[in-house]
Length: 431
Ligand code: S3P
Image 1 (cartoon, rainbow, N blue to C red):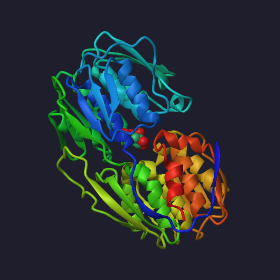
Image 2 (cartoon, rainbow, N blue to C red):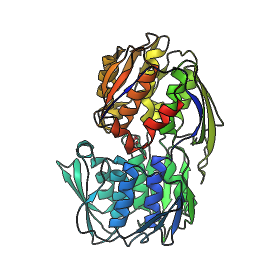
Image 3 (cartoon, rainbow, N blue to C red):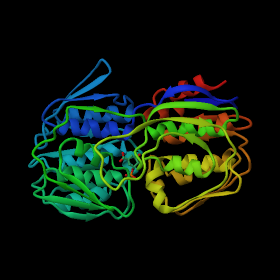
Image 4 (spheres, rainbow, N blue to C red):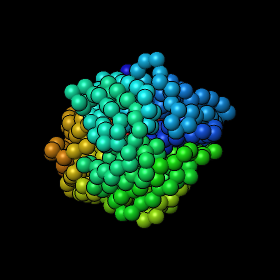
């Protein structure tokens, strides 16, 4: 489906960010791994996170969606049922990477995970390597791509240094660690989002952090009763970018998760002199069991270019396409370095962003590990193909509102993977 987004007057209004996708996936998985029912408030009911509910059902958990609550009656840590056929993860990379951590501990049972065409291009060797070291057996196409088959085993505790900063891979190993025979430590080259660690701590697991290393001690059970999913900073980021870019805008976005390992984009926007006020969590050495939230107050203003360095990348990984868009409007050259991981997201996000924004009139070059944009004070407009990637679809829509001639987004329906009411929400804010 194609929709044209016309240049807009100022965006104004108050709204709530939609529920967080990353935290919803984790809530459903930990709910399924728990022995007692877990009530989840504000679960995201979007395509990706519905795949997670379907997956845990296939594994024997009972899922009930009622009165604004999602209740999961899990199977316990070691009792996932072997399903009749493959588990379909749809488009959800987080499900594809996290779920095998739990399945690896199901001794004597075998599980196959598959998904859509985009999932079949996303590497899973990064989780297969540590899970094999722990004692599970895994097979993938060409040793690297889904479908992925996991045969559970008796797991050993390991120390594992991640070759790339990836919260998905870290989380996969930490979930497997729950059923291993001791304490497992994972090291990351740079800090990445820590939702899994926080939720495990909340569930009574012995988990601690020491700098770039996190250790999980095996557990008999997870004790979670209630969880509340905060609003998604990564979804709110599209509204924030629209508010910053479109002259005359003033938005109040409520209930946004501001865990510091997710707010790299807000720090980048502020460095570009964008106006985003809120009570952001400061970097913490100690692990917290909670997810902080804040209201964000966003207003239009002139932007300056910035350089995003490799250590900032994992903390803004899903928002870097928006940094490119902001760069088109900023004074000077905006550069993103050390972001080669973007090439293996739902699309090759370096190629798709560069091609897409160039088609709208941007002066932007791809590099091996990012891009460089020369701000030219705005964007002409035109047409952009989302290539099945939800974040590209939403970026195209925001570009249209801020452009001189409007933007047609080809494949806007992709937005539903993470933000089902995105188009209606944007329309409601436009004047
Ligand atoms: C996610 C981690 C990131 C991010 C993805 C969600 C998560 O992926 O891009 O959208 O929920 O853990 P990587 O771990 O591959 O960086």
